[in-house]
Amino acid sequence: MQIRRLPGLEQSSTNYSLAMVADHLARVNRDLAATLAALARNERPTIAVVIADYKPDPAARIDRAMADLDESVGALEVSLADPGAFARSSQTHAHPWFGELPAATWACFPPFHQAIHLRQAGFIAKGL
Image 1: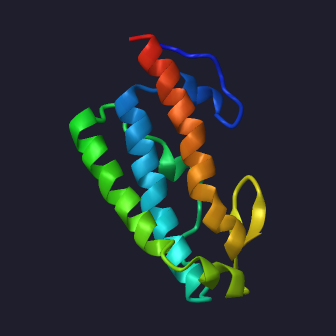
Image 2: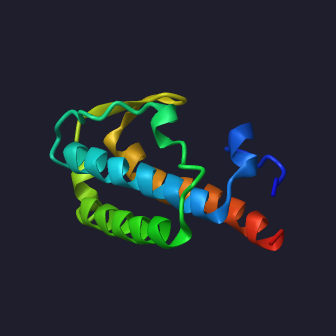
């Protein structure tokens, strides 16, 4: 089912299934948790953010995608355990759309990103 394009979403995201949304979030969260952990240690993250790496698997199964999403949210919680570490960090990391971002901005990214996709999932669910 196709939904209308929402602000912050690419056109290709209008055809995602709920499993694909969960798969995408799990992929992003996993690498975001590793990036945040490095930034919190005031280290330069080694993960290059390439949008194509976060495209979901069109054959994603909801049970596996949800398990991966749950695991990735746990990793994010661990990486965000010390909010003060981001304020103390002098490191930045490049985002392909937004450029170099400081640690404190990266720490704000998870809820912002997840909110966009929660809205997307709501529109998909209404169409089921």
